Structures are given as C-alpha cells and as structure tokens.
Image (cartoon, rainbow, N blue to C red; front, side, top):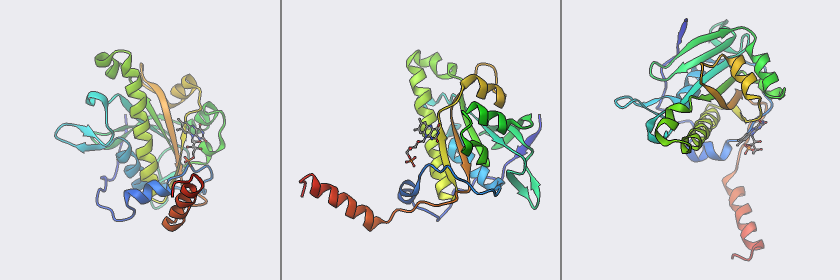
Length: 232
Ligand SMILES: Cc1cc2nc3c(=O)[nH]c(=O)nc-3n(C[C@H](O)[C@H](O)[C@H](O)COP(=O)(O)O)c2cc1C
C-alpha cells in the first residue's frame, strides 16, 4: 500500500481566535475551481482526528473511554490537491493514520463521482476539493459500553466534524457537513474496511463567498431581541 507522508501539522498560528472561527463558520455549498494544498489537507485531518497527546496516543477529538472508533477517509478527484508545483495527489480514496500523520492510498479512480451519487447527487460534493468521510468501527466502543456505545460513536463523529469546520474556517476554506447519503453505497465507493461504516462526511473547498460577522452588529441584534422580549 503506498503512503503519502503529510507535512507535519502546525499548532502555532495567529490567524483567527476560537471565537472568530465560531462566528465565521458557515456551511458553504459553492466552491471555486481551485485546488487545495497538501498543507490544507494536513491541517484539516490533524484538526479532525490528529495526535495531540502523543504519550497516551490521545487525539484532538474527545472519545468515550479513549476508544477512538473513528476512521477517516479522504476522497479527492483529479488535480484537487496540489502537492507541489503542478504535482497533484492521485485521484481516489485515502485512509488517514493519525499516529504517523500519513495517508494510505486505498483505492484509485473516480471515487468522487461515486460518492457524489451516494450523497444523493448533492452538487457541492462534486465541487468540493476534499471530501472527508468519517466512518466508524462501532465495536471498538460497544465492546465496553454496550448499546450506549452507538450513541457515543455518533457523538464523537459530531465532534470530529466540528473540528473540521473550525479548522477550515481558520484556513480561509469552506466546509459543509453531509449526513444525507446511502451508507452502503458510500462505504463501498470509499473502500472501507470490513466492519467499518460511514457515519458522517464533510466536504471542503475554497468558498466563493466568505461569511463575516461584525461584533457590533451581533450585539445590536441581541439587544433588539431582548427589547422585543421585554428583557431590558
Ligand atoms: C447532522 C447534519 C447533517 C447535515 N447534512 C447535510 C447534507 O446532507 N447536505 C447539506 O448540504 N448540508 C447538511 N448539513 C448542514 C446544515 O444544513 C447546516 O448546518 C444548517 O443549514 C445551518 O447552517 P450553518 O451550518 O451555516 O450554520 C447537515 C448538518 C448536520 C448537523
């Protein structure tokens, strides 16, 4: 299996505060036809499910009992992710391995078109330059927590998706969460391991329009809402 070693993740950054990332995060469904860089992919995957406490093997995502049931896959099309000047990641699906911060090439080909169909042909899935499929091996968590483990896995996928949303915002990119898909079709297209099921997906690209929230305007809206409710 061929491996792509990702650029090492950057932690130091003075681009946006957490509050700004929360305020400017929106779901984007219209993307420019420009590639993402491999640095973007590195940061997005690290934020999603990267190593953050190496001694214990703990990741950026909280995980019930630190069971870490999620497996992240990246699907890209032709010339969607630039490695260096006019060199691109091969189209297909890749599995992200947090411990080594690498991508393992799982399946070559036009997978993006297949996952687009599996996602009810939502056009932003095709327009996006990176589709991150959050899948899970439920057994890793249900082994300890029984039925309740199913809830824990789904909650963890939500944490993971939010990490991607916020990192995308901090990088000036746009993301949209995708929950509408045919599980079996998506899992098969991506080439998930036996026993692993797709839970959630996030599509990322360069947004055509950025969202900005002005603090004074926000305060004014909250004050007006309070006045209307008789709270002042
Ligand atoms: C569980 C879940 C599933 C979603 N599935 C889709 C989807 O399949 N397609 C889509 O375009 N947006 C999807 N969204 C995004 C929502 O439509 C979006 O978050 C909502 O309209 C609020 O907009 P905002 O994210 O800009 O705040 C999903 C969001 C969540 C939380």
